[in-house]
Image (tube, one colour):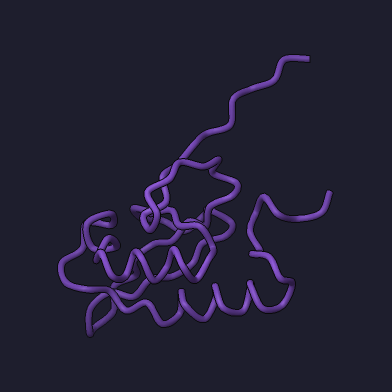
Amino acid sequence: MVRRAQPERTCVGCRRRAPATELLRLVAVGDGAGHSLRPDPSRRLPGRGANLHPDPACLALALRRRAFGRALRVAGVPDSGELAEYIDASTTTSGRPVGRGSQAR
């Protein structure tokens, strides 16, 4: 059986490379007031995506560096409220982040 290489992506927070299944994809969704960050664990939402470790430390680092605007090519600072709630909920419920690659098989 031939093993295929898994795609790797770079976390916009810590800038470390990891398999795409370990990272959370997020997209910027435009509304009347600007852009907001929406988590995309199924990796199906349209638009340009960025990847982030589903960890509050990586989120804080990305916010401090203002990395989301550059990675998603949006002007200004996008609202990260929904993304922060998702990451907090996923890390407090099970002790580890919930994503596509962390499901039991």
